[in-house]
Image (spheres, rainbow, N blue to C red):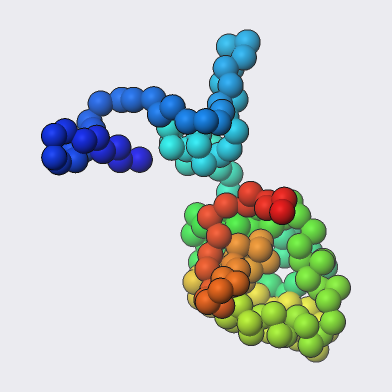
Length: 168
């Protein structure tokens, strides 16, 4: 985060450490431990990249056994980048694939098209994940993780950077 402060008639970049005072609590310090309200807030202060886990090759194999998908796990292991492995790890801890596969065939195809996902439903009614292009694979995984959405005003496609639920 870059902080700027006013110095006369100009703004200057602040190079010192600082606390930002707001009207809400972002973290609590209790019994020698610091508890953050969200990953995002903690990540602004400390790099948490080493704490986000990725799917291992064994977990990719298990992912390939999920009912409703058809995927070449050896190809995934070969082309997967860090993002792919993180998406698989996240998706493996949800029931999103089974929820998607319970939808009517036309609905599934419509959703794939609506969100620009390059995946097909085969004759066995399985979702075939593309494994010849990591960008296409990641797009399918983002879709299944519900990380792609349409703006309600412009209908443009966006990728989410947060899983914070809106309670309104």
